[in-house]
Image (cartoon, rainbow, N blue to C red; front, side, top):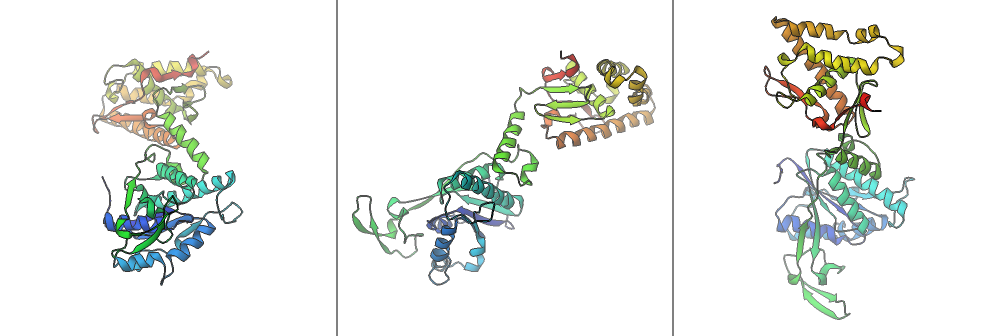
Length: 399
């Protein structure tokens, strides 16, 4: 399924080294075979790759990009492609790479490739087609990895496949509408002349897993290194596993999952603990309750669990703890009342606390199933916690 719209800017992004042919071959496949539009061509390359692309493609009189446009009656001005569209890979000190050979070169290259893909996919007005056909093999791998991290539903990744006789020929850039003959040397060293009518170009789509929907939102805005992004993405994926335990530490006033935790205030801690308690007690809609189903006994049970764990913290006595949870007296009074204003006050209190907890859980990058959630429509909302009861652990019960 494509989400293409007429207002989107279609960008062809290539990695290329000393074979600029892959750019025009991919352009040919997209525009002439698939009938797709290309508005802009961006190329990630090295210093020597830039020189080869400039001389082979971008000369207005002899460049193959302009020849392609003339052959297929395309206004070259309709496709933004000039030297400003060539991004040179660089070392941290600003030195441009003539080639990518060392471990450090590769590390610097992947960071830049990821940053370019992140920038291009950040704009909702773009549709990105990335070609992994050129450049060093590591460049192609890194472009694929970047597309997995940042690619959206409308973005594509491909590799261009060319008939073996034409693949490495320095004079073959695309299949021209009027056939011509090229002198080719096969692998046995035999020279032959073949017509471009015999050439084939296939654009092979590369399916890739789009992690954009499951990784942390910060990765779409941060300038972190590739290795840091991979580590954080793996953490996000690990947190999707059902095996992770939700730990409620009432002494520290935290909710933790794996290595991520949320610090809560007393009122927030109590409401979260209340929902966890009800989830473990079961009943109702799998532990989800309407506010008018809550009882003072529920509040008392959770309060006793909290006070039992926190009684000796910093020398607090019973009066100190009761004072910190003084809001419970008011909440219990509202719950015991049949007056509409009291019911509205309970509703407003829970809505406000749920909203604050939600923001804190989002900031801590906790998966949604560890958030407090609601079910149903307004007026009949049920409040609760999605995580399985057996995955909830109260830290004060630990030895």
